[in-house]
Length: 193
Image (cartoon, rainbow, N blue to C red):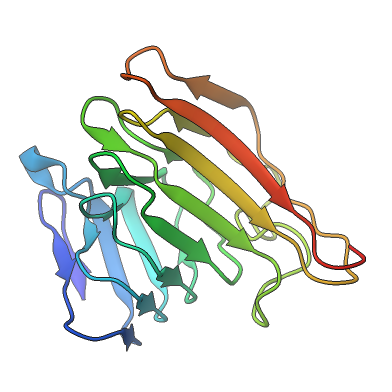
């Protein structure tokens, strides 16, 4: 699947689904800013490699879309943004190494939220260190923009009996342009981790 700037690839399924095809993506979804990849159904796994060919965004739609998993990894020398529409706790989980080198932004201003982004080190395919910026010499910056009457959450879930770590460059928290929003980093260690 090739998603060019000003286009959106919408993933819709009546049942949980795993999509194995590789995706090449760019942009934020055109003037509507719906994301180059927009997930419109619950329990969707994107298992194919995702290659950014320009700065790109992924949206879990309506803020309540849960169970989105990226297991194929994201690569490219560009900036990555993840957001959800409206208020809510839409979830997106990374379960394997991602090697893109640009900055990471969770959330957007106005009627958007960052939802809950989980770096799941307990997954069988996850590295011990750096699910994002895996093998990258200098990790990119992390910007968290508080949601619209909800939180933008970065959740790190550890593996049992293992010390896990995630590196970022500069950290910026921005709630100034939101209504009742907050930015939260949540850590959950595995048993004995």
